[in-house]
Structure formats: C-alpha cells, structure tokens
Length: 457
Image (cartoon, rainbow, N blue to C red; front, side):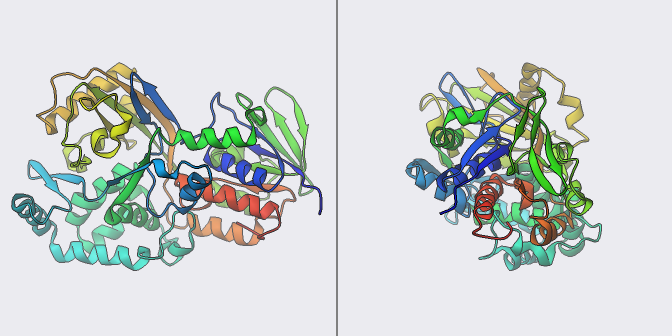
C-alpha cells in the first residue's frame, strides 16, 4: 500500500474540519491552519450563566445526512432534540399572529389561517407549494446541487421576481419573503431560484432538531480526534503557492513558508480567491460569482418562560412592517436544554438586508439588544418589561445566496476542472448549496477525491 501523504488544510471551519476529519480517518497526516483564534466556523456556541446559544448554524434538518452520519460516528447522535420548525412558525398578518400550519383541532387558529390564505389566494399558494415539491420532494439535498440544475437559469432573474410573476405578489410578501429573510438572511430579490426553493422547502418539510450542548460539540469532537496539536489557530495564510499548475505549499502571513504538495483550500470564497493568485481564470471566475450576505444575530435573555414549550417556535414579520429582522425564535420551544432552568427563556432575531444593516452594524452590543427589545415588544406585548442580558454576534459573511447561474458555473468547474491544479482542492459550502451540511459533505468528498475514490467532488 502506498504511503499516505501529508495534507495541509487552510481554514478550520465546517468544510476544513470535515476534510481534516475524513482524511485522518483514511490515514493521512493533516495540519489545519485557521486565521481566527477559534476553530469551528459556523459551528460556534456562546455560553453565559446557563444560557447556551448556537451563534451561527442553528439546527440539524432531517435531510442533513452527513451531519447526522458524523454525529453518529462520534456517539452524540442521541443528543439531537427534535422540534417542529414549520408547524411552530407564526406569521404576522392583519395585526395579529397567524399559525402557518395550524392544529386542525384549534378552530380559532384554523379560521385565522384561512383568512391569511384567502388574502394570498389559496390556489396561488398551493400552486407555489406544488412547484417547490416538484423540484425538492425526494430530491432536495443541501450537500449537492444535482437536484437544482433545471431551475438554475442564468438569465439575470431572481427568486423574488419568479414568485411574484408566477404565483402573485401576496404569496411573495406574506409567505416567501419572511421565510427567505428568516432562514436565508436575504431578500428574495437578492437570491437565485434554487436558493429560495431550498429555504422554503426547509420550512414546508417542517421537522428539525438542535444538538444538546450546541453544534460546537461537533467541531470539538473533530479536533479531539485529529489532535488539537494539528490545528493551528491565529495562523492566517497569505498564499497557497502554485507553480506550473502544481501545488508547492503555503506562505503564512507571519512569513513562514511550509512546503506541501497537497493543500485543501477551505476558506470562504473571497478569501480563497485572495490567497490563490496562481489559479487559472476558468477556476477563478466561477468562484468570483459567489455572493454572500451578512447578519447580526441578537439574543435576549429572560428570567421567565415566554411560551408553553411547544408553540410557537417563532414568528415571521413581513418586510412591509419595516423592521430590521423578519424572525423571532423562542429558545424554550426549540432548545429548552440550552436554558438555565424551566423558568428562563431566550429570544433570537437575525438582522438582514443592506438597506437596514448599515444602521446597526457599528452599534454596541447593548444598543443592538435595546433596539431588538423595542421591536419585539411591539409584536409580543406579553413579554416581560425587561430582559436580563443578551448576546450579539456579527457575521460579515453569513450565507452564500446562490444567485442564478452561480451553482451551475461552479458545478461545471467541479465536473471538468476540479483537479487541473495538481494537489490543490477547493472545499467550502459554496461548492454546493451554502449550508453547513454542504460544507461537511464537501469536506468528506474532498478527502475521497484526494484518496482516489472519486475524480471530482
């Protein structure tokens, strides 16, 4: 058997750690270089006084087979806590909350839902759901883009225009827009059709789960397996050195040069382009099409319970209200084990949109928390008169928004040019659909590709 080579992984986020983990399993020596002082990327958690918050990635969707496979291998799959993502969501309509998927035995909720449906046009709404099912039901998987190729038209259009033109403005404004802004953190007009379909389908399918102790546990388990001494924090890479279409090694910003003929580039797309000046245009240009949005995740802590622990999971605010966020999520309904006790709660919101975010981006944590509370109090009058603390995290590159044509361009590069540079391998969420499941599955496939099991990812 040939000796397993050493591999450098640039980036210690979801894609990088997954690549390192799967390479380690196959017997490769792995060194991970991460620019930040922490590893895990979107698998980050925050703990304070018994509150535990997933800062970035929030939950495990039923279709996240790679995440669940890794959690199983690490013996923590039984710590998933299920909740009803879709059925537990309410929408603000006609000055009150309406259950998007009401309990059939609740006559009042069913009547309110009927009013909302009639306003959107029930036939239009059902036609939209049927369209989503056509592309997603039984096919949708965030660790691949094969399912979406027929709907990724490189024609300059966007998901918002598509929904408005085919299913009506009211379906767009009172269902699609708040859902896409809540989970996709962007306006439908800034996203491609495939991106919008996957976000909406996530809600329509309904089920989800959170990991007891937070998704950061997965990152910690990976690092413990490959060895913390092989994960170098605060070690930004200035360049992946490529000469004559061959990988030579990496240069750190500190000036150190490390020779290695196999390097996995597992940074964000903009960072990948910055540190790979030797890439040919036919590999560079597809990655240049990647668009990213930012968000502010603001969480308020309360010393009393806000829900009955079952519903609502959260509320969706349509953009016509002019608020800086479109979702409010209750911790007690989706992750009660992340609270100090049965009498505590937390509410998370996600600021979005470049028409709004600049107003808040440079504010202090306390200023953002105060503004968050002033907004949610308008829609949840039963909230306590004060919050006891909170946490704010700013994510400058929160989501890959998959504008039309970008997934197809990247797939063409993967299929036909992925190994054109000897020893160089892209790995990242943008190689597929942008979720952390994409990143985990991409890292796994990169390891398989390096090992000769597959020819491209």
